[in-house]
Image (cartoon, rainbow, N blue to C red; front, side):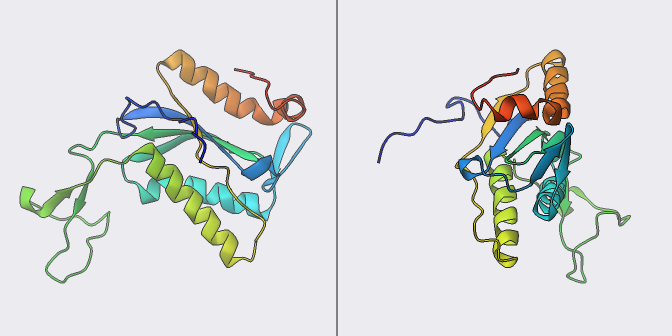
Amino acid sequence: MKNRKRNRLPEYDYSNPAWYYVTICTHKHIHHFGEVKNGEMILNEFGKMTNKFLEEIPSHYSTVELDEYIVMPNHIHAIIIINDVGVDHHRPRTNDNNRNIAKNDIISVGVEDIRPLRRTNLSNVIKGFKIGVTKWCKHNNITNFKWQRSFYDRIIRNEKELFYIRDYIEQNPLRWEIEKNNENLDLM
């Protein structure tokens, strides 16, 4: 098996609280999620479901937030925020009736009633998202869909970089005609 280039920084802990810019592509860059018309992304049914799964990421990972994002015909751009696991991020244990305590229940708990959450890493978040979309495909008899292996990421280092990345994501449909004709064009 040939050596694969690693996409992640080998010395970096991707469970560190940070803002991450990610790009997730379909296998062979096949257009599955819709099309761009007049500079606007028009999602098909599959694209709408993919968008829904993307929006639901924070409901599966309590320390994760989703900032700017877009589903394009053959890829996704998103800013994923991994927050620190601290006082505000915990999961209540079950109560005496052996049912889970709802998120909005008003309860009195002691320190012994709270179990800390494990740190979430970026690869697990993306893996969970990809698995969710793939399972939906199989359940709906979409057999020709595959993700490209791995994903691309960039650790956002400052507000200026965040501004440019947000703008890039927002403007992505307008740049589509230029980009689709030259996959190697770097517009950032």
